[in-house]
Image 1 (cartoon, rainbow, N blue to C red):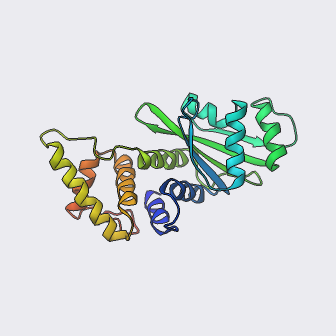
Image 2: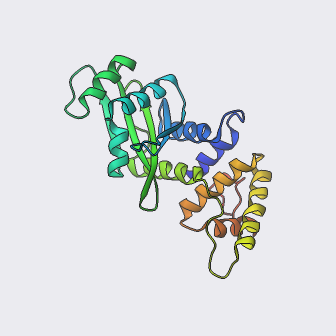
Image 3: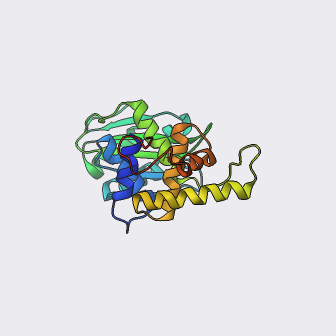
Length: 228
């Protein structure tokens, strides 16, 4: 799954921002029609990094304005939340469901918290119009959301393993970033984001991930999960 996400990000149109390409790749993997990435979902400093369609932007705006919906609850509870928006009244998020139906019609909205450790940093939202099931189960969808969250974290070289100084750690990461750029033909920011996502998926530090790339035991150009 992460190899598919990597390829989708690497080969998307380069004029788009990295958050947009990550979001679009995640939406495609889960069988959605559009989506959004929003940080600090329930906080005053809330920031929507991208919306892939006008409908996605409208659904995010409604949840922010109304203060209810699957995104807000996913952020607060740290678990996936889904809404089926239809003409009938809903016992859960009734105001949002009514407003969403008026805005876009019948739609399913799935919200996945993007977590870093025990903290929820934001929400990855996927919508489907008309409503239907996702193409992947909830565990895989949550994995995709967390991988995207790991990819957009702002400090790429904050972890320093025991016995390795910060300058040496950064040198390893910078070298690995260059190798990923060469393997996939992508920009340095994209390469760094993919390194972070794979480090998260393998439950290793960024420096350990970089060492694997530098020692050629991890190759991003492979289609079968990167390990020879």
